[in-house]
Image 1 (cartoon, rainbow, N blue to C red):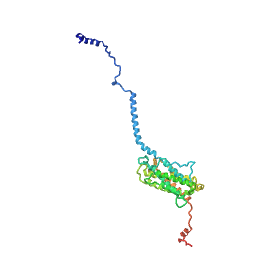
Image 2: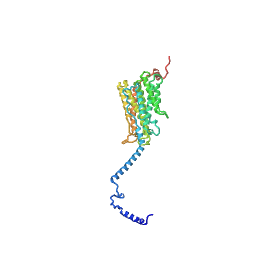
Image 3: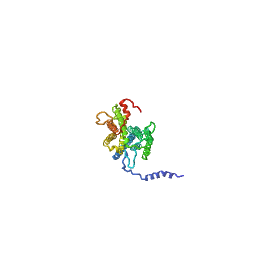
Image 4: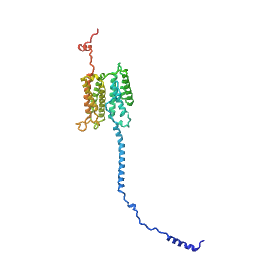
Length: 357
């Protein structure tokens, strides 16, 4: 056991050792207190700019989402009314067949057939493009059916042309793309047979008179439909869906008639060589061309002076009146003379039937 003397010295030694330690000298504080610190103006400006930038990005994203569908509908409503131009290395036995095939390919490979789209597709909300395409297919069907009768060597129309005319007519519940593709193939088969002499190839002089009569019918039907819409009570501004349909139906007929006239004119040497017929043909071409080139940004059917928005339906109807008159006049000029039967003339004069020997 330690002695009492050593135990008594321990606290004292401890105190001496404790006093010998160097105490830290208090140092004056040179650091800034964070509680009183002020933010940098540059950082404040950057924070405001960042918040505004993020807000603009969010707003743009919302507007882009909301406007994407209408924008897609607008950009998908592309009506191709450019002239039909045949490549130099491409020749057709019947020019109207070439025009029909090019028109079909243009609609299928361009905007696509709007009537085949599902309900969610932007093109299913359009009015102008479906009216244009439906009128184009219907008019092509009528024209091909006309060619089928002319190109027949017998009492039956040509098989390929008759099949193409049926396929060009829309059938409710069926997609048009397969029908139009098959119609183009049938038209190409006929033209191939005609180029090899296996099918009757009618001349432009034979086709033009009946074409002009058909074009005059198109103009009359379009003018009547436009007149009904002009005089109808307006239910939408600046035009209703019915107004747009009537306008683009007439425009599709005008464009097809103009292209067919140009195609036939290039080979109708017997008609263009006659001064009077050439003037009548140029008049019809110009009238249909004016109607085909009428392409407003949006269709207007407003009554009044038209100081701001003209009445496009009235303008189209006026052009169709000129086209109808020019087509009917040329059809009458080109029509073959009617040979009267002598027996029929005797009956008309005497009122008695001729006696057989």
